[in-house]
Image 1 (cartoon, rainbow, N blue to C red):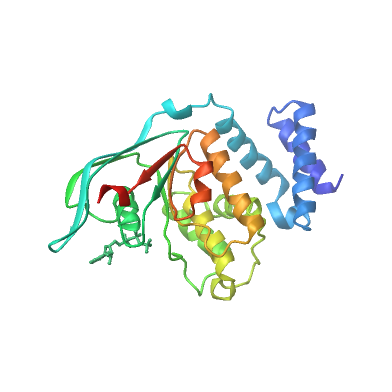
Image 2 (cartoon, rainbow, N blue to C red):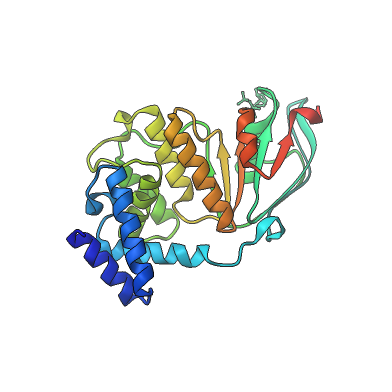
Length: 268
Ligand SMILES: Nc1ncnc2c1ncn2[C@@H]1O[C@H](COP(=O)(O)OP(=O)(O)OP(=O)(O)O)[C@@H](O)[C@H]1O
């Protein structure tokens, strides 16, 4: 095992993890780094910080699964949207609970992105009522990133907005990026990232502050097949951790991964 791995395992044990479990986590982490062809310290940051981060995440995940009967994280009642005299949609009722993944589908222009922005509180509905949890993560269709900042600078900035200390925001961002098989370059500006990698950054930023409700607008545009599968793996992990997820999609084969499908086009 590497010196980083030894420090990581020691820190886990110091934090109260059983020796066998600490070893298993150290082995899994080493394997993850090998798969990314990266040294663990460059992928996960300092061993002691990563051990603390992983432990806090595992504590969340080992809570009893909420399943579809988890707390309501989003409820829309009779929601409608008009632009001037044109009605985009009307009478939308939708409830999404913790531990549930919902998909919003429908033809181009039927209002999926508009509905998701209403869910996020970014667009006002013309009618109806929206109730949502306070901790919301939103991943827009067009990347909400700044070309002149690095990934680390995004983590620091978005983390600060959520009250996270800079080091914690950076190590969390790097950890979440590793889940999508991405290791952000320290000095690389976002404008020099590929479209798919910018979208990974977008996704990481939406999740950085551990929201209870994740709202994702076709979040995998530009992903290659491997990253697309990593993304759905990540969605399953969110569901198991009791989070609620709403995904706008037009890909029918995505629907095998979700618990609830809301066809906005069918309302018309
Ligand atoms: N700010 C706005 N002002 C006026 N009309 C708008 C505005 N935003 C969206 N629209 C219109 O509302 C309709 C729904 O747009 P929206 O982007 O929500 O649809 P969508 O289902 O997400 O489309 P796509 O599948 O192409 O992404 C479209 O006709 C669009 O032109």
